[in-house]
Amino acid sequence: MNTDLEEALVETLRPRGDGPVDVTALRRAAVGQARSIRRRRLVTAGASLAAVTLVLGLIPLVRGGLPGGGSGGSVGGPGIDVRKGSMTLPLADAPGAAEKPAAVGTDPAVLHFDVDVTGMLATGATWSAGDGVESVRLWTSDFDHYNHEYRLATDPARLSSTPPPNAGRAAETRQVSVGGRSATARFWPDDRSVNKKPDVPTWSVDWQPVDGLWASVRLFTADVDEAVRAAEAMVLTRSQRCVAPLRLDPSLTGYKQVSCGVDFGHIFAWAASDTTLERPDGVRFDIAIGHLTLGDDKPFTPNRMVGNRPAMVTTEGGLTMIYVPITKDINLMVRPYKPAAYSQSPGTSSDGHTFIEGPAGLTDDELVAFAAEIIVGPDLTDPDTWPARP
Image (cartoon, rainbow, N blue to C red; front, side):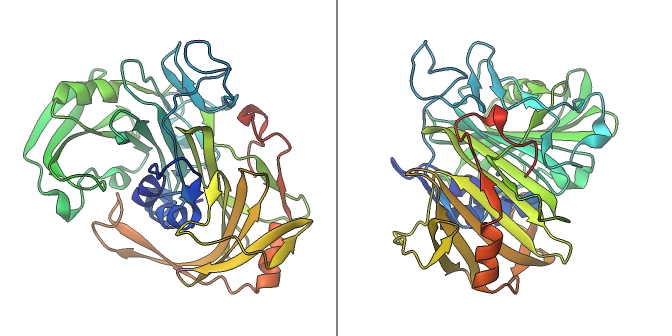
C-alpha cells in the first residue's frame, strides 16, 4: 500500500478502541502516505494503503514474548527488542544506507536504516518505503500519538520539513551537529500538522548523514537537544525487510512492487502490512492484510467468492475494492486504481503533493480473479518467514 505505511496512514492507524483497523480510513491514509512518499486510510493516514481502518494498540511487544518475560502471543518479527532498545524487522541481505547510500529508496522491499529507541517511549512503529523515500513513525502509547518521524532519501526535495500552512512559520532556526555533520534544526511552536490539539511544539532536524544522502527527523518537543539526540538515533548500518504474509501466484508476471508498509506495536504485535503492485499497463493494486475492518460501521455483506472464501466487493470514494476475511481476526483488502497525476496541493501531505487516482477500469469479476491469485500465509505469526517480496 503505497504503504507506502503518509499523514493519511498515520491518522488512519490511530487507536479507535479495542478493535481492528478501519479499511476505509486506512485507504485514505495510504493514499496520503504512500503517495506523498509514498502511501494509507487503507493502512495509511500519514503515508500507503487503501481504505481500511486499523485499530492499533498500545502494547509494546518483543521478539519471543512480552516485556518482563511474559508469554503473551507476540509475533516473531516486527516488534521492539526491549533488551537492545531497537526497533526490529526481519533483517535484509543488503548493505545499510551508510555503506550504499544510492540504494536508499530504490527497492520498496528494503529499508536501509533502523532506529535505536533506547531512552525513547516508543511502543510501536509504522515503517514504509516508496516514491524514493524510506520512513518510520514511532508510536508512543503514553502520548497516544506518533511522536517521532524519520525520513531518508537521496533527493533532499522529498524531505522538506516545512509543515503545511496551518502549522505556522518556524519561529527559530539553528545550526546544530548530528554525528559530527552539520545540520539545520527548526522549531515550530504551534505545529498542527498531525491531527492533535493545537500549539504542539515541534523540532525538526535535517542533515546529510553521508554524502549523497539526506535525512530528517521531526518530533514533538520543546527541547532542541532532544531533537538532536533523536536524529543521532538513526542507524544507517543495518537494512531490514518490509514484509507482508502474502505473494502473487507465479502465473502472474510483469508486476512490479512500488511501495510497502508495516505497522506493529498497536494492540497487536503485528497490526497490518500493505504493498502496492503495478502491472505493465499501469494499473496499480493496493493490497493490505492484517487486523483490518471495513470501518464506518459498514457490515460485511458477502457478494462474491474468492476461491472458497466469502468476499465483499464494495465502493469507497468512487473506487472499487474487495474485502476478504482470512481468519477470525485477519482480513485482506485489494483496491485497484490507475495513477492520474501528482497535483501541487500544499498542506495535504508531508511533501506538498496530493496523489490523484482514477478508476482502474476493471470489472468486478476481474478484481475477484486477481484477488484469487494472492497466496496468503501459511504462517501469519512469524514475519521472519514471510516472502522477501510479494
